[in-house]
Image 1: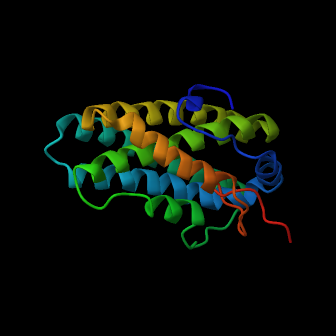
Image 2: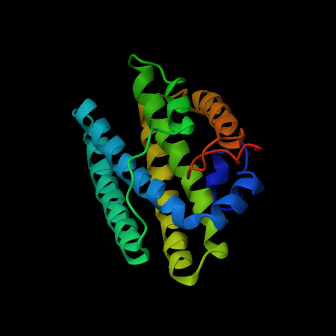
Length: 199
């Protein structure tokens, strides 16, 4: 891995995933679009859940707007490339992360922020890995997105630091869980899936 995301990710994306994603990047655009919407939705949900946290609201309001702009950019790319929009079931990665989250505060807030940081860091890493392997128009876009995701994961970490002094220990626990999910074989190729399972 390269870049600041190495600060919190405990395992690199397997090369098998990178090769599969580079070979099927058109198909992954639909999942990518869904991820951008989910990222905006997650930020908004946190704002509604913790309205008293003014710094969180201000930071995540800007982040949500940026994620929606990214969605619009992916959507435009899909239209240009004639990639159809399809409804998808939730992937194993996101649902797997949710199983590790605490359901009550004060722990719930910290877990949500740290999970947001891990997802953004994984996105950053994968955009960096894919950018050099894709056609020029998409490559530049993905390189730009990598910079945005790096900023987003740092913002989530900053908010987590304010939420709880013991954030580092909890981050280690959640990052260990995330690393298993990101590297275990998956039946479906998704932007946050593991490498393709052997057929």
